[in-house]
Image (cartoon, rainbow, N blue to C red; front, side, top):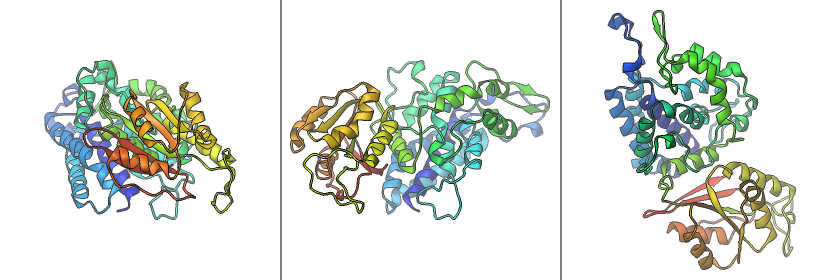
Length: 410
């Protein structure tokens, strides 16, 4: 299974488990007159909770490994087990809004073809279509059951000690995707998309809504569907701060969500090489210029980087004395109101010392020879190689007792 397929499949498992665990409680649904009228999706219940929570723990341990290394048999087998556990959980409790909203995402794809999928037609993989709206959905549903949302976060490895109910549903620092523009679906999401899909599917019936009681319809338990229809705009609007999505961004969001970087006491360092240089030929080979500016393509890449990381909790940006690194960081620095710290490109020990003093997450923009060295020092893993013509590497190092390194493309 290619890494992109493993990532999408794992995201589906993740959403299955969280949705069933955060679904409206079975005690909050209208009691049917006789058992034969009981719907298949009962809402969260003590039996489904056991399976869903264990699925979340397995996902937290093994999903990133399964994506990073296709030959990691333990990780792949554990994800198969997690899929089965989550299936038992949602098979009784049900899923809700992320799955319900995935239908218009997949149905309105026009030209997008997901990397890693050998298909001859446009497609948004199911796991990707589900996870696109998940961050906004869980912000929306968290007030209905803060304790459950925090418990799910704890199962994924978050340190929830001292957290307030208001913190439930908050998205951990990441480049989490939330809209469909990257999948080339309509960027102005039509209001009927949520309404129609929620009205036509049972996915909406298990959705909790803040401050609402379940609403019963004759012969059918609807959950908070009426209130949901009134509030669909708030759910969709909450998703719009994230302006695009690629498989790399999905995996980036996932790694930051599930890895050791999620606890507030840990730190993630994002490492990128500077974007394309103005003195780079069409074939990708750099010519000899002392301190070139970025090319048009380089400025476009810098803008994409800012869009990805503007909500990632970056508190410090480090660049080198060369303009190409400073210009790569400039859009994000402007968006965050940060002044990049200029470090000498060849002084890795000094940069490491500065990173240790950072409170929060950091971005480092370096060079093809300095980024691998820094990543190796931070992650305690062998150095990778970045070719002269490679400008799309994005490395995420989750620091802690067991540092982790994730290599992405953007």
